[in-house]
Image 1 (tube, helix red, strand yellow):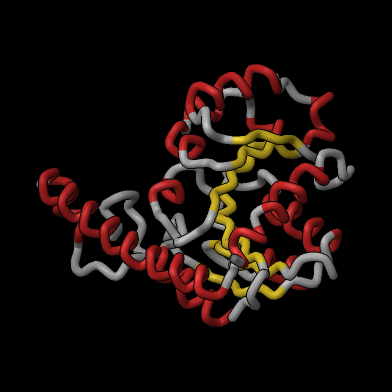
Image 2: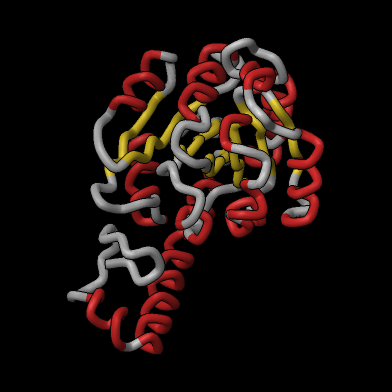
Length: 243
């Protein structure tokens, strides 16, 4: 069991829940070891990607924020312009992977079972299965969760966090670690903005407090509004990765 979040997807021995209940010092030490092991594997992933000139994006959000829909639209709109592959993370099923594949992208599904996030070891295997071409983009669609994925480096070039207008304005304050790690924050489902109470300006102020270095944009993958800014941001990183 992962001492960080309680999941069972890391190769760590024994019944750790007992230690968690009764020995907080040991739990902290174990958590540090787990994260250190993951960080070492993540750095290997980063070097592997750099050697091949591949851009990797860690795409994170709560469930239902529109990650898969955005990737479907991106794959279709940029077909022939950008080689896009996806590592799809879910606890169960290959439903999202099937959607991505239908959009024309190469995809590898990772099912974490009880696990609530992807880790660097899982991504390493997926990358070698995908074998992305130089100059291509790999988007790692993490398990829907605003907590644990923020703690695990996967070897990505950049982190993108989605927040839909249906989730409320206060998410950056409630989940600061997730938004603090973001290079780009994307407000999604803006086509529903007229039907929900979401204050874009206030959300931007919260992002400024939590993650002043992050860029912010908004879009609707359904209507297409705002998508050019997302595409420009994504493609602007490709030459650097290829170099």
